[in-house]
Image 1 (cartoon, helix red, strand yellow):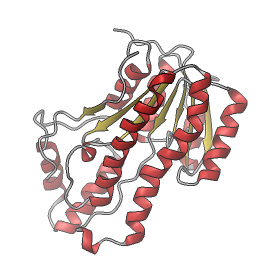
Image 2 (cartoon, helix red, strand yellow):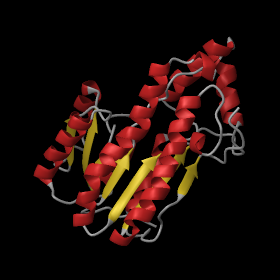
Image 3 (cartoon, rainbow, N blue to C red):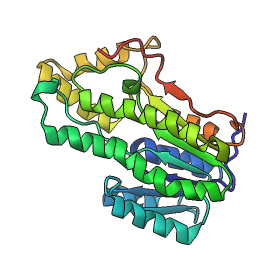
Length: 261
């Protein structure tokens, strides 16, 4: 099946790198117009220079955890289009590693603010544009940590379970407007963020990074990493006209996670 996103208008939070940028490139290749934001100006400059910047890619700087900046981002998007077809709530941080009683309160609070409250901000300003479009899709990036417990990563785990709750609730609220809401739960993504998690865990446990890497891969029945492109591809399908009745679902793209420790 060849997925067509021609004429689709898609907003992506934290779209300058990782899953966000990988997804943006896939959407552009399939004909969509993409409005992305990121806090990192270096990432944004690379996006602007990319060969896919063919008048269908609009790039803005924005701290997704700051409502005023999110509102300003949508003000800029509204100057380009009054309607959108999809929102990808992609922003998220790994948070700290450690046992709960030793973690700092400010790190807990920041993890929840970035990973949960930002989803509220972006959804809040996207929903009127989706309603004007008479339907569309919201995809919230959760994690396999939103399905399982995750030792040493309690704030991250709590935030990703919260994203699943938001997804289920919004799907109920918005179904009558033909707005579909789903959560994607990536497994262990091969990339820079996971590299930092592995580094922190190896330091906390005082074992080698190679041992931690091997442990993460062994947690899936397919014995595999997940790649950023895997997430962009499933998002493309859900946004497309080929998935008109998929809503309220929590979809794992993880090589079948068996355990989280």
